[in-house]
Image (cartoon, rainbow, N blue to C red):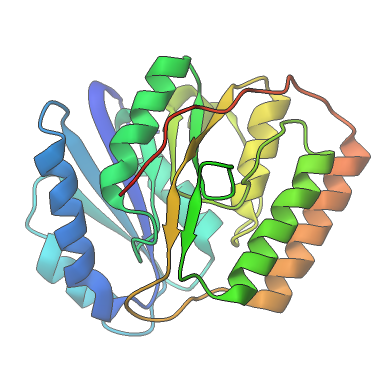
Amino acid sequence: MQASNSNLISVVVPVYNEETGIDHLAQRLDAVGSIWPDRPLEFVFVNDGSADRTQAELERVFGARENCRIATHDRNRGVGAAFRTGFGQAKGMIICTIDADCSYGPENLRLLVEALEAEQADISVASPYHPLGKVDGVPGWRLFLSKGCSRFYQAIAPVKLYTYTSVFRAYRRPVIESVVFEENGFVSAAEVLIRAAEKGFKIVEVPMTLHARKIGQSKMKIARTIRQHLALMVRSVVSGKQAPVVSNSPKQAQI
């Protein structure tokens, strides 16, 4: 792990075949800094083996920025592997993770960090399936998979949440330094929460709106992701570990 900065917030962004969306991503990330002037930010982009011009676009847009770094995988390894790479380069005491397609407004990172501090929590998670959360234009297949998996995890996981599949999160540094997760794909989002709960870290949810992707296409392989979720569920049941049930954050994001 990199040496940490006590006031710095790191934002890890996995990117895969997003050449057409890099300018849009830059605009949204610039807005984060403008509404959050009191905290220094760094951005760690992980190009996960893109086969298009994503690397060139990242270098064009972010390469010269002092607060941005670009890590590159030689092949596509999956979003979980990208997060591990990004965590290894992040310097902040708080590390946030976001989707490159901005399906959650990056401006809402501030709400995640505020929830960490207000609730004295270790992880805060964007939760569209919370009773105060919302979904806007998201394809039915994605909702079916995500909501279905979250309901199963709610029944078997050591922490009771409404949403387990969102990667729009904020972590305190001790979490990423001590929680080991093995999954490389999208199922890593649920695995991190389960492993963190097993270690006793406190997790809170922040009700938020999940928006449909505006540029490009989803990279999720549905059949593979379902198999991976089922395998993780079986392992979680077999392990039989329990952790305290946590409360949900009352905050709500309107952006």
